[in-house]
Image (cartoon, rainbow, N blue to C red; front, side):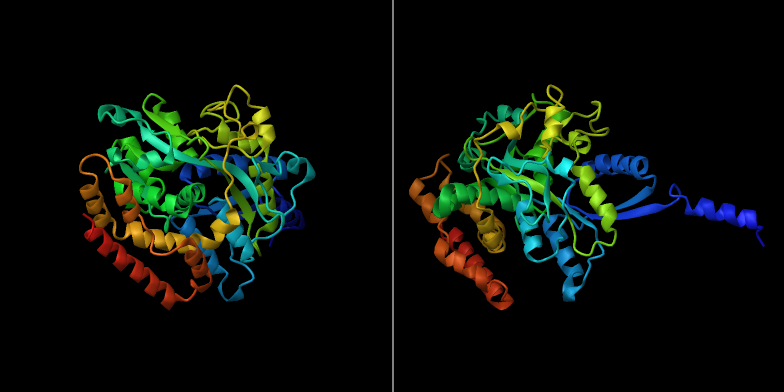
Length: 433
């Protein structure tokens, strides 16, 4: 039996905060490089600041859409908690959706930190009015292309979204199925809101017809461009910029279509009923701090920058930019740029699920038939605008499309409508001469 002094010593040792270990469970569609840079720095920061080790577990179900389904399943049957602490990444519409469904918890940042996160940039909010989410980074969307491939095949470099629909690029583009990728869904929204219902469909149809294949992951088109399997891809900036940083500007390039680009905050939030609430709050504070935000904008190996790979993202903390002038991967500062397009996020959120389904039924599932029709129409290297209008004619008006939203939870109606769209699209493409 332990002596009194030994018992006291054992109590002191096991009660020591240095021996304790806190926990944090993160659900995130972010790529592995984000995890590899932020988590080790957080664990070091946590031990130094709080005198306690922290165990961080990182989950990803395969992408943004899959992660959202996972959260919904965890909160099924009015569960008070999902068992998860943090949802990080996936774009603004993802967090608007999660907030409206009541899955996010309010958290007020410390005043000093909140002062470093502006309310808006180019008219885009960087945090929700209910303080249920905050932008941890910002994204832009454009065209990623392999300069060597375009040069070898004597193809021009693109300038606008609609350039990707030119027959010159047939079979030289890779895209992701928006039903599996929040990034792809957002890029489609940009095109539709910029060019309108009919104009947007013409552009998306011609780009889809030029596409070699639709992938399930938003990273696959990036890999295809880097490998030279295709010349171009619609892409989110940080995937493209990270590769450009690794491989070189002489080989790869990323274009923000002038007057057609948007900024999309990429938020972080604490989930309702988070089992490790205090640790979750500390993690949010850390991610938004200037120290951590520098990981996004500094090159690999720079003091205060990432250790393993450049992340190539835009920070949301204005102080991080002030402290890195002349040191960043790119001199671009979103807080000093004013020519971005502003999306109607409420509209995008409301119609996203229906639009992804109609996109899939018209352009992804009948893709083989679409490509054959496109090959027949563009065999001379151009396409008659009248024939493009006929090919890209959507099966319903925008007004009728908007009315579908209220009925889309009826799975019988939804499946019947999708099947009808798919059947009619295949018939139209096969009859195209």
